[in-house]
Length: 143
Image (cartoon, rainbow, N blue to C red; front, top):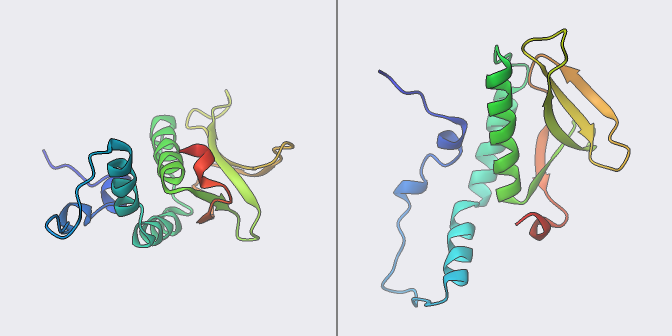
């Protein structure tokens, strides 16, 4: 049985091959600082560029089922939260990505809603919306 790479595999494709020079780096006994080091090695600018490219490739894609749509949205949102990034529309409007499942659509719809108290729907459709990522204004609030 052949397994296909997932969105997470594609974003972190060469993380496993990164060389970590342990001899020259002082070892910290503080688990929190080791976690912070892991975070900064994981969510690099290269990772964000790769995620941005994948989002562009997915734009206009129909994933065929509610289950697949939910999986894609959950994965994208987890990666964005971890990276301290946010989604914006091509017009630079900050948005949140979600999937809705109305009774008339067994596959559900992707939705982009404004990331403010009003939460106006800017996009609702069967295909993955056009959007891009930007650094979040206050990334520490989600970590």
